[in-house]
Figure 1 (cartoon, rainbow, N blue to C red):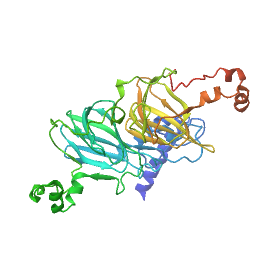
Figure 2: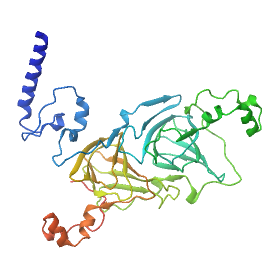
Figure 3: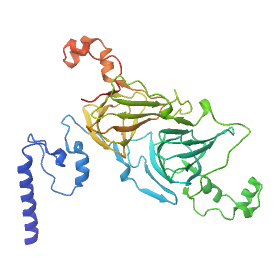
Figure 4: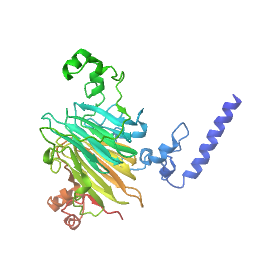
Length: 408
């Protein structure tokens, strides 16, 4: 009892000391939910202080947040990593982030020569290489094929049902995988070659391939998923030719010019069916936002927006209607989903480092409606009346999309 009283006394003393310090100013950046204006109090119970420091918006930092908005953020660091000979994979599926109905994703790593075994999916697969180089190989239903090397920034898209594989070419290789179904892990979504062959009678395999049954004596007992190997040196030739032009499964992002960004705040690459015709169910952008820059207030009329933050630190407030809004803080390795048609922005909170991310939509095209342009192209007296602004202010709004606004 004495020890319990002693501990209680320590806690109360600690709380009093903290309160004495924090009354003077806001303490969100110190991991405490105190606004310095009379609201909040220190956290005394169990908490992950580093997570609190990394997420000041969860502590109530943004006074404009309101109502009930579900969690829209997931860190790949919270995913279970599956380690295998030659690499690893960690996923984010709907069970991790229930708000992401359209998209599931994974980070995958291959050592040199390692192979993500031959497989296909019931859903489309989209990939973005951000470290090293990989060899992708795929065959379509008409017997046309593609074998191509991809490096940083290069993208592949395999339509549902298309057979493919990936092999690492550099010492270490890593990429983002995206799938156009949030419930990616359910049975009947992925079909691996070894798994299928191992569950087919050898007599049938022998008849199908025209080989003796003994040829299949060394089949893996367990589906390898990723396995070690040596870098492929064999060339492929086929009677029906290669997948090229509008049928190509590969898009070299940085061989194309970025989109126009009147706001001057960074780089914006759009990759969808308008310039990558095969990608009919996944549209994407690759965005680099300069320090203190702003991805202008906007919404997307065609789909949810799923995001992967690759480097830097940022913040976004998501407005889902009926007075409900919530702010989230992001750093490298975070994923997020903004609900269909929800209003939002993304801000680079760093004064020195770029914020880089990828946006994904389950759609054939990237589409957004910016708030400023909408207001600028609406009768100015109506806008002035609604927002209680001087009409001269409204008439000065920019009529062109700014996309990425330069920081000040």
